[in-house]
Amino acid sequence: MSKIFFDSSKETLTKYSTDESIFKIEPQAVVFPENIGQISEIIKFASENNLSVTAVGSRTSVAGQALGNGIILDTSKHFKKIKSFENDKITLEPAIILDDLNKFSAKKNYIFPPDPASSKLCSIGGMIANNASGARAIRYGMTKNYVESLKVVLSDGSFWDTKFPQKTSSELQEKILEKLPGILSENEKLIRKNVPQTAKNSCGYDLIGCLENPEKMFTRIFVGSEGTLGIVTEATLKLVQKPKFDTVVLFYFDKLEKIAQSVSFLREFNVSAIELLDKTFLDFVNSQGKLNLENFSGKTEGLLIVEVLEENKVEKIVEVLTQKTKLAYFYEKALSEEEKQRIWALRKAASPLLNERTDSLKSVRVIEDTAVSPKILPKYLSGLRKIFEDLKITAVVFGHAGDGNVHINPLLDPTKKDFREILQKLANKVYTLVLECSGTISGEHGDGVLRAGFVQKQFGEAFPILVEVKNLFDPKNILNPEKIIGKQSALESVDFKF
Image (cartoon, rainbow, N blue to C red; front, side, top):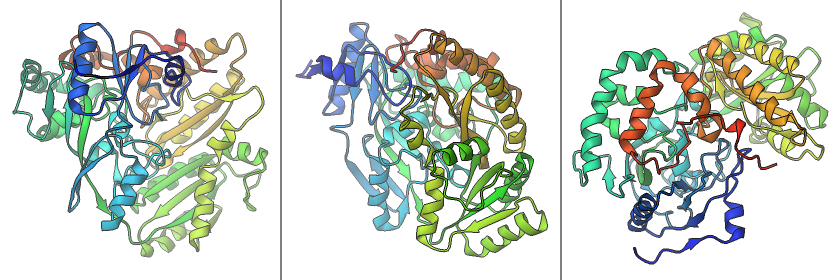
């Protein structure tokens, strides 16, 4: 093994014991590989010594994907190169930050469309690992839609280019090439029956994506796999032209049902974002004196922030929602860049306010990424409110109404003796409701250690297929174990960072 420095200092181990999730797991060492050769050596060393390897970048994951009790392999220092940029294709290393990528590609009038709120911090590698998306997924889709090919290091330390999967260089690669198509084709009916049919999904492996894109099967299987099947060292992405026009309209509603009906109309206009601000969200921001909406009142059950990219559609949308259908009782249209920023700032106001709380209540992201069909959002939101009422919990709800992806932030006191018990009850009740609504427990944040114990409940009879895929790629279970495939809920045993 070449000279590779493993950092086991207390300061470093403490730093890497947490990410943006609620959990704390201390690793044994942290390593910063300088090239793919070192990544290969580290994986082989871990395999020989029965250690896990968790690859990380910016560590912005909210479900604990960046935590592990073995070796943390941090690519953020040495994997920041852009290799090529021709037409709408760009090849780069995984530690590139999303905002930096878009600043670079904007020089040629291109953007990488998936837009998580953490764009200033999140790395492309992490986005691929989670199959990330964001507010504009309703128009642009998820990360999986833009990954052309990947270079990965597999669990045996071998290098594989998914653009040319037939060019194998190890027995493991040959086995994957031979077995994976059969696993998927033989179980296609079971997969289609049990995989969430929501507009977006980041739970489990992308089995449907592999079936529907056989020419990219060996690329799609890695997107959303959270580093459990291989470690991405290079990605070729597809970009899109930057929009020439965009504006934002804020619509006010007095009933949840009217919001769902409006979403159906808005989807027909192919808008780029439909963001929901539920009454719980509005009441919380208002209680902090930061709402700044003159027309907000007690009858406001929710707002929709609608982004439109075609100028000729704006007035038509306003007419449909406020005059023809009378679903929205009021609207505000951004007439300047400053007004657009003000409206978007409203959407982004809750998280900072939640994190700035100085009392004993903490924003606990444990059920923060569910998704259902937009048509049944009223049923789902009503069910959530009933659960909060039964458990005597205050929660803030907002999210991507256009694809039914709801972000829920319960406010809880971690110092209470029954904190862990409350979290388990809350997760079980909410995930049961999600499945009753034919939804997914993760729309875009992934499973991590947080939801791994619930994935079997989500996939039912198809869960053994996920296990078979994991065992095929990682027979010794050294790559980010206990993510996606979990034996029990982390809420039962894993330490919290509070």
